[in-house]
Length: 146
Image 1 (tube, rainbow, N blue to C red):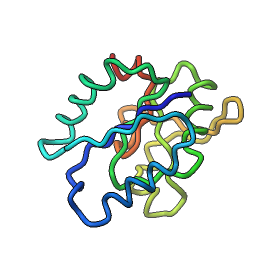
Image 2: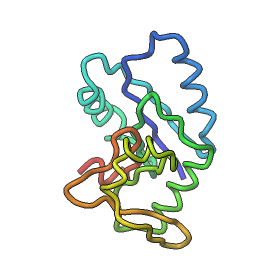
Image 3: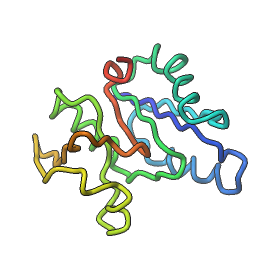
């Protein structure tokens, strides 16, 4: 499975930024195009740029937008890949970032349904009118384009 990962950031000049990007790169075990975009004009504008310049032409199976302070676990691509296969009617996925009580509050745990599973993938649907946490969203490229 091929991934495109996009990070829109304003932190590229801060100490430790390059090391953080290397930590993120180290989690890639599948073919991955990695794009770091200047987000100083706003995250939405940078992601619109990514839409025009990256998403519109990619042949990747999965398009991921990620914040620059999210370090996903080493198996995130396997988890997302399994979810894409096991749940074809879903167009976007977020990752559960852990069971720490503070992290659960930040991730709006109260907005999620109870655990379900499909082909050994455990997942929770987001209850309407809530949405996926913007720190990490993996899309089917066709859904992201729409």
